[in-house]
Every structure is written in C-alpha cells, then in structure tokens.
Length: 83
Image (cartoon, rainbow, N blue to C red; front, top):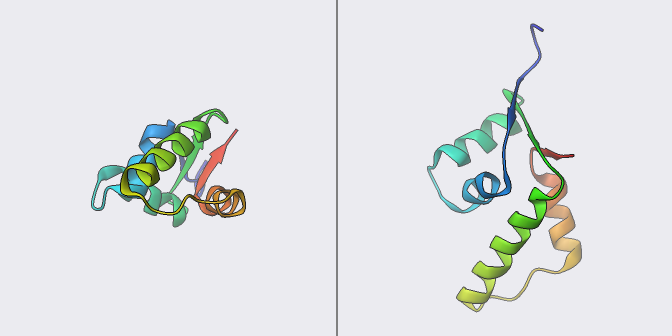
C-alpha cells in the first residue's frame, strides 16, 4: 500500500550490529526504521540474541552490567517489533 513503510524481517544479530557498529548497513537500517521509512520485524526470541551479545560485550569491557529496567527501556526504544 502506498504510504506504508516496507517491511523488513531482521534477526537479533542484525539488530545488535546496528547498535554497536557505527556506519554499518545495520545501523542505517535502524535509522530508517526510526524515521518510519521501513518497518523492522523480528521474532520474539531474537531479543535474546541481542541480550546475549550486549551481556558479552559488557563482560569483556568490564563495564557495569545493564539492569533489567534499562534493558526494558532499550527494547522499547528500538524501532523493531519483536513478535
């Protein structure tokens, strides 16, 4: 339909790369979704891939772990529909 954003199905790895790799195609895709140029849809279980990746990066860098409330805010702020 005209006026509807194109639907793109993504996995958790794509979302994670978009969050952490500056200038990547995945980051561009997240920006396009945030501007309603595309609609990103992912399976609900793919959120676990994002969580595992973030947890591993935090562990490797020695940063303070993200709390449950912050992770929930992150999930809600992402322009991805985890179904």
